[in-house]
Length: 102
Image 1: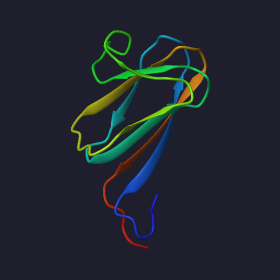
Image 2: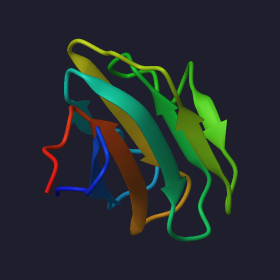
Image 3: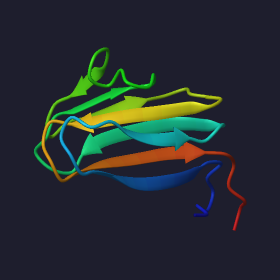
């Protein structure tokens, strides 16, 4: 995606969370500057960055809310997410790299 006049490129990911309580992963590309996550449905989301921890040591996103991570510059970051309900979608948008001017 190119954005005219912008230095960063937004990427939207719809991460399917099929089964409540199961951990789903999304690799966040190196160079990502900003990330936002929310649930499309009515579920509570839990996320972590260590495998197996989204059910133990996690950050909660209440239904209808989003969570923003700014000033990132990750290397090898993996976002791990689970939902309190079956058949949910985690809407994730992140900005990475520099876009070419159109």
